[in-house]
Image (cartoon, rainbow, N blue to C red):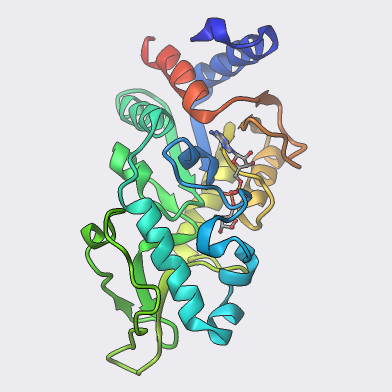
Length: 266
Ligand code: APR
């Protein structure tokens, strides 16, 4: 596998491996790119099918839900259908292996994700979700949690009815919405606290598959850097993150197994 990489990338992988072995407090932030190889489109990919004329910002905001709750609900039903049968890829598995290995070493790994899928959990990781969970719902008015319909019912063979009636809250009658952090909304307090603490105290911050465009998550690298951490970025495309010490410009599913096998082989 290493032989297929460019000489520059091989040198960067060697540098990154050194850091991964050396540092003890590690904070990892993942974004949509880590699930791309599992077949889940990222947010910067152009929307397809029914949704090609909409931008994420037209669908994932509280204002959009107030304007047209059925449209927003339908988009999330469609996303659930896309994600329902997807499985973790080698990048998720490598991180889970590393976390498992760290239990019997001196390394402390905090895994934070912006993703609302559960592929990290499926791979066996412990993960903090900053942007909510695709498989949970809540009331848009009183925030009462509401159970979602069974995941099996979204299997890609079945068709989700996009014109289905909206559910309402049994407590207050408000519309039920996905338990996702939309643009302009605050992040969940405990999860954000975990992320900030991990970023501020880490010696190594690894940013994987995120465009680093959406704050406050994108600011975690800055907190880490200000406190002396080294920053590694894994992303085949350039990002605006200027704090990076080592750029691994390849797919996460290629790079992470390479890095982690070096650590686990110790
Ligand atoms: N491996 C690593 N990175 C990849 C891969 C891959 N195989 N494929 C794509 N990428 C990179 C892209 O180059 C891009 O920089 O993943 C990034 C995905 O960026 P976004 O779609 O912007 O996803 P993310 O950064 O997670 O978005 C942040 O924005 O839409 C909101 O709340 C939503 O959580 C989301 C947040």
